[in-house]
Length: 304
Image 1 (cartoon, rainbow, N blue to C red):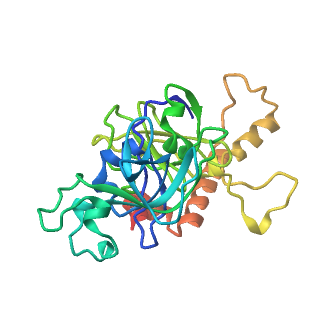
Image 2 (tube, rainbow, N blue to C red):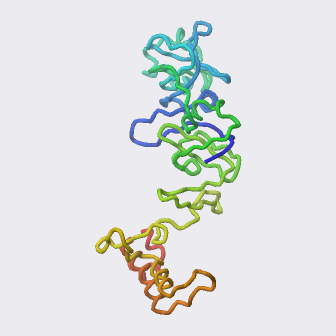
Image 3 (spheres, rainbow, N blue to C red):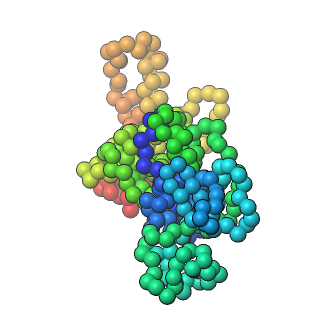
């Protein structure tokens, strides 16, 4: 996918019963959506330095309080792993705060009113290591280093996630009808103003479009005998033609006639039409376990 970057960059969080995956993000996105990222594990890139007796992580656009008990951070650009806290979304008696001096660490007076959401934020770092600049663009690389790729054309691959189907993103950019999420194992981005196209492992493209509500839907056939080439396993023999469940029966008939494949094509006798239809019906019944007649009578039977 080649596209000049005009993306609202945001990290992803998988909605799952499993432990949360550490997600790549950047300071601009992190501070724009503190409620979304609160208490989530993250990985982020920036420069670590002491500013007014406080350790901070900074880039060209923003900075944030960094709490790291693991020693001295390496010089230069660092990759920080840890958890983001928005203290306004925590309570003073939160057990996670019990090991910290609120006045000294967060500049919070415990006897005064508690800060509002977004007022006091911090990254509780578990590891800080030298950042390695990516050799090529990827979803993770763009997420961690957005300024590096700004206004450049990039080619990236990822898993299509529709209009935030998994709730991984904090907000939709609302830039076009075709905004969609592209995700990898530890990062995600919004792609705007580009109609999504999907390809399977064989290179077949799937057309996507919008329904009346604006939801992205599949507008093409998928996993049919024509696109997936189903063959009966009990008579399959490698290295030769197969009795397939598709229109190959028609092709074979035309080949036997010596047709030169220019219009108009040959008339198909009733026997060829009936036999071709029978192959599609058999494929449907084998794949679904349903009677084709039942499907014709009530198409919704395949959804039950």
